Image (cartoon, rainbow, N blue to C red):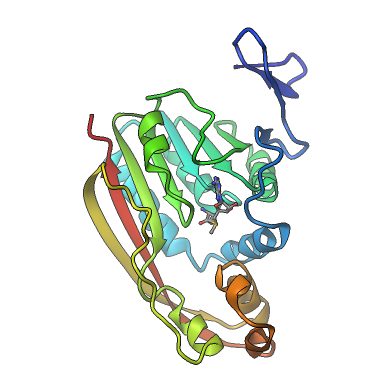
Length: 259
Ligand SMILES: C[S@@+](CC[C@H](N)C(=O)[O-])C[C@H]1O[C@@H](n2cnc3c(N)ncnc32)[C@H](O)[C@@H]1O
């Protein structure tokens, strides 16, 4: 790939010279028809994450990347959302690439990278199941609360490359569910975790947060899948709630590509 003289597009090196444009926010638009998260849920997630309720978890993920990936040249955040974690992780790698299906998420992420003058950080709209990357070039992939595409991750990871998967532990956001549902359930183990990679370490990070602002509570709820599964009647239970205590529980697993 090479960038056009005016810096607004990139061209593939192949004979047909496919051309992809940068959006006005600065991300590369590789999948203009993809959907991903909606404008509303992206906006809520951005507002919630900016309050740093998940900062402890973000730091733990960064620590684990630092521990297991030495001299990181190329890091990919697969399903990066608005770049909350990507931004932090880009300090650990020479180059960082954030990929998400949602143009709204990539838009916010790229704007922030531009504002922070992060020259080593690029975002693109693309699917984690079809990454716009050559095989064997990545040192590390992080995959946080997003679909895990083991086969595609193994294709783009270098030999010995590291995959960090973070998702919801059993009691993640149980306090929120207790307010909304009569019989709140705990989360079960996700089904898409890697099966053929070598599991090196699994960490369970659990802590409590206290939200004292109704806007934060609504933002938290709106960025979760529960928002789409909850009746209008149950949603109203949050309307006037001014305080919420809830557990935050991240399951963080580190895998290595075996050959
Ligand atoms: C729950 S959000 C997590 C975002 C971010 N990693 C975080 O934790 O803040 C899941 C993200 O995955 C994206 N996503 C869903 N399916 C995807 C796919 N097939 N390829 C790339 N991104 C996808 C959504 O657009 C959304 O931004």
